[in-house]
Length: 149
Length: 100
Image (cartoon, rainbow over all chains, first blue to last red; front, side):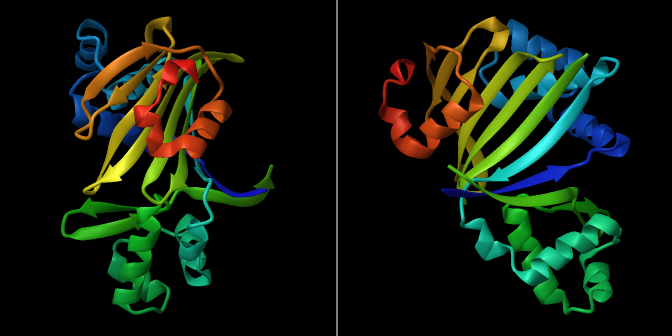
């Protein structure tokens, strides 16, 4: 039996717009990326995957489902009660900075920072740089543990 | 109308299988499965199975993430590729992938 943790994320319009903005930063324009992957027969996996996604999002009705699966028990060392509480809090509330998150959770800055770093290493949260602030965000909407053969 | 399903499957703390699949209705129109390892803070591709331009193939990359070789491959589902990755892990880099 293998223990598996599956994390699902709901992606709203703002999230999809952010995906497109990130692809623009990585590749310039959609046409430029298309040129790269077709004409240059690009062997860059990221470019091909981005092209497939970007094309789908440009099409009417196109969409994205995003999932993270942990096929290793190592992740359970990271998912302490405090960190799960942090994930849950970030799911329902917006914070302006790490300091703001620490204040709202009534925890000290260093422990909050360390816990965010641990969650970030497994891709469970992102920390967005906004001016002088680092803003933690989580799109985790469900976290399911199962056993599989 | 295309629906893209993107998954990051963590095999270990420093090894992932990134899967991108595009569906048109129930049909899987594209797949790309990339086995990456974490090296000096960057996720570098080691092996990539994909169906780009309708041709199933498997690519191998060197330690710096540059394409090393490309072989034909027969289409297999994500579950099979994950099983390969979990069974052989980095040893895949020295195996004959087209025969697996």
